[in-house]
Length: 196
Image 1 (cartoon, rainbow, N blue to C red):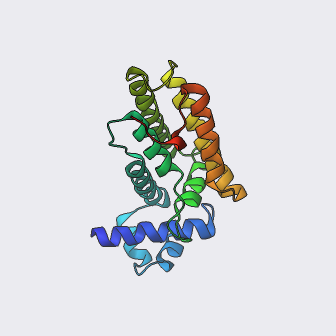
Image 2: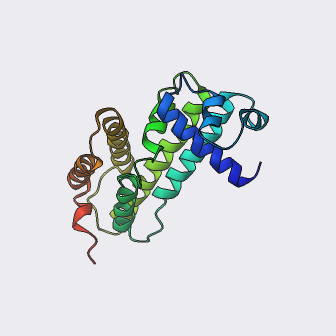
Image 3: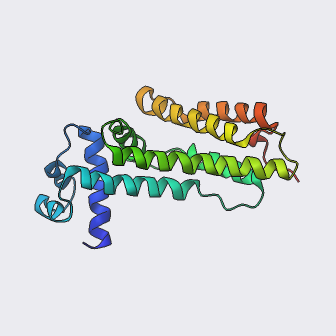
């Protein structure tokens, strides 16, 4: 299957997952959201779980690329990370938050989904922990346990995802909470920007 077809199936899966939810998602409903036939989807993905695993890989890859911060300054890395995590969807049709929630709800029942979410959590915590550790070493941040800060920030981000999808809460409110938490833990507020 060409990458164009794969992209179309992944996008159609996101739309169908958002519209019907996990329980009512079928290969036919995914096909109905695209120009690819149900038979073609079945040819490449034997089961709904196999297709959803590929979809989850795609979602997580997109998320990980959004939060990958290349700045050398740990303050810039944390600011860029927060920008990526709390960036507003690019369109009303952005399937990422709802689709991610649908699959998170299945993680207790599907080990493969759970493993992928553990990898995602590890990636989020690693970005924060590394930036905090580097910031302490550079003298920018107060002396704290970077692992604890990363755990707290990741937990707040996960909670904000639930609040955004389930309650319709804007991500700005949670970003402010993360910034206040960072100010308390490390003595630095990302919204103030980077100063030399």
